[in-house]
Image 1 (cartoon, one colour):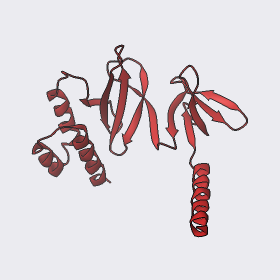
Image 2: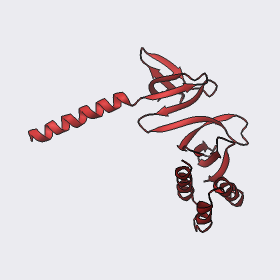
Image 3: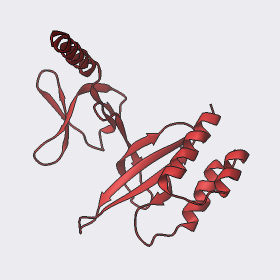
Image 4: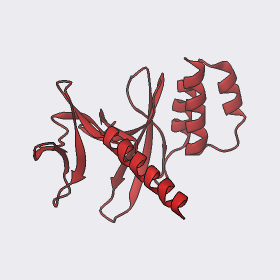
Length: 180
């Protein structure tokens, strides 16, 4: 019983030490990194709480990215095609090909997820979406174009029977590993 209590205390103290190391942060448009704790206020706006009770609102005009340490998620301001203004997208894969996830809630309350990829930090390309009745063929052509300079991956992808998000993400991971 005492051994279990000691082990429990050691685990809790090590987790507290880990939480002290891992912090949320924002990166401003000027390149400054500010660490603290990210939370949403009562209006639903994202706020960074910095030591000394300082609060900074995360706005797309001033903050180019933010990171939730507890979830390990990075959000980056990117220009969404056909939207004419930047929005935050979650960075899922980083490398020569970057993969981002963008979610939008319709007035009916339906969440539509679109995954964008970009090669060498070029323009975002819509490679897959959860939206019903969306055109698949143009997205497939864009994805094939992204991986086309890796002959073995391209050949394997053309033999695939499924073209879902997980398949495409795995090809992007493989592409980025091969490009290192």
